[in-house]
Length: 289
Length: 316
Image (cartoon, rainbow over all chains, first blue to last red; front, top):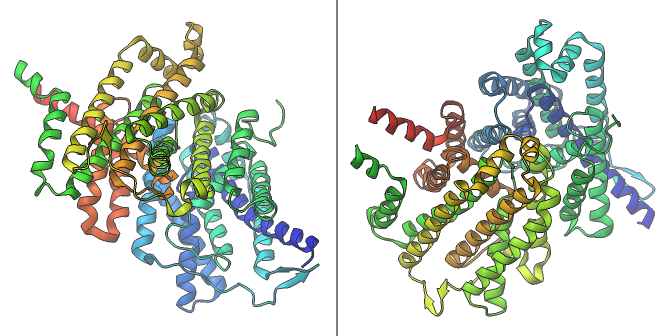
């Protein structure tokens, strides 16, 4: 492999992890805008998505059906959590909200431990196609699938929030819940929809990456933290900013691991984050007011 | 009436429980005392977090980072440079103080989720530096053979002796924290919690106070780290992950935030709970999570607030 093909390899591995970070960051943003809280249990939907799909595939259920069933169960789970717990927490202090979503995430993780135990699961690639060779770099088909799905999800979100009436109502709730409720919008229901979106996107991110990584009940922590970083780079409230933040984070990470040091890559990424937070707390892509 | 007031004095209850606990819990075994020592260590940590979050309103999701720094400074200085445990502990506290003063000023200018994010990131940085700087810290495999605590040659190797020392220090931390809270400084901190701009309008130098309390709680955390390291004798980066910071938050809210006594109850409860739910094996995580969800929804004032309500009602 030439130096250039290494760079290409880093670029694509950055785009792959960046896609996952972008998806999780976007799901965090949607939930944040609807419920004014950062959901620390978002990583659990990633895990449940991947593990439910792995179990269904092992039972011999076809790929597409397994994908949709797993997606549906995460959506129901997210909706259930919003309905049972989150509605009770309107206008509570932030620390309590953080601890509450952490508590939910502990319970979900415990639930996953009971169902799947401590084993790690990996599923077969969605398409049995030989890895593509591109200027000396080897690119498995799943990488393109992940990027394609991410693009598709982002497109759907854009269509939903810009072109549908429910999307408009949800944006209104994010801007000003009290005014939206005066206009006859059911704020709780919009928050429920947002959580369902969050569950769906979290599950999708877990499922598309399931053939590349081993997933077990604790696997949701790191993607959640990285999604959180991507979200802060984008400034917490912007969906496109969060998605860009995810890709930026994935690429930065891939190139620091490849070119600088794999040992200190986390330290470098997190230091960059603190610097961004201090000097540009509204995110890198915020429009000037 | 008067007797009841004396009997419900939290200091008295705590001191008595500390005195008799190792004898009540079965066979005075090193294991039971060990759990009780962890209770003390986590109590110190959680009280610090309470001063920072409950009284000053500054969120931290990285409180374990200075716990790590204290433990590692103690471990490195005693095992590699032959310093006495007391000297190592003091060096850790001084280093933590200086470091938190340096990072406190820029970081505490952040608010709410941004502050949560920055403190979490700091925790991750500390962990990846510990794992990365293998030559100094032993990397992922940690440092072993840390000597037991000693003061001027008097060793606290016996677990019961160390237990009483650690709890004595913990009670000192409680007294000190309550003194801070009830002083004019404490009132300034509460003002910052309530409304920072308002506090500034009344002439409170918010940056100074926030940085000051940040230094104090991190010195506490470093102290807890040293006490922990000298007891357990072996430390590894896993003990100080973000997960630990998160469980400190959980202890704080479980016990009752903004009360100082709440963290004592929360920390002890959460350290002793696994010894009971341990029998549930794989159910443990689920049970702990559900208990916490339940407490947050139905007992938002935490265990201490609820206990206080019950005793008040009993008094009529």
